[in-house]
Length: 200
Image 1 (spheres, one colour):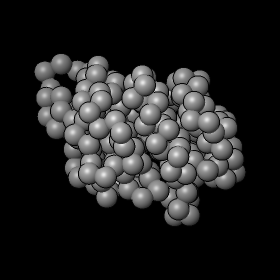
Image 2 (spheres, rainbow, N blue to C red):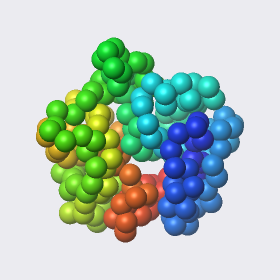
Image 3 (cartoon, one colour):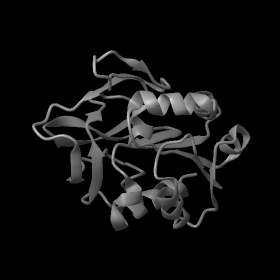
Image 4 (cartoon, rainbow, N blue to C red):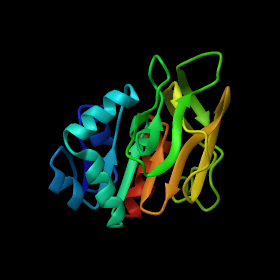
């Protein structure tokens, strides 16, 4: 079973429909036990870093994620759900950092680009031997964001560019994340979801 974590952020029904195409049972939940016991946990997210962290902490979501990682249980973060896996984000008017879940030690910061938000389809420089991008290395994916992580973290990194180079995805053992929305990326996104779900 795949659990989609409901912490008040993200297009949960869109994600639920997309992940159901993998052939797995899918449940949207804020229940800690269900989220921990699932074969795979999806952490979606739209909006601002701090607001998402507040919602996540309201359901003890940071602890759920850390507990899954330490227990070698798969987690997939999407968009802001990727960003909050980092140690800090500075999506505030005064630029002060806000603490994230802390799986990876880096700060999510504003993209240096003439047009923000970054909205649309981008190709991805995929990691060698990537599980997520297996068979879809040359496809494009749908992004909508103004902040990103730019530091190399984890075992495998995939990159894209909008104004500057930043992480499009990270694969790090039992934790993976995409800055783009696979559930909004057409057949390529569904293929990525299938690749991830097949790895569970």
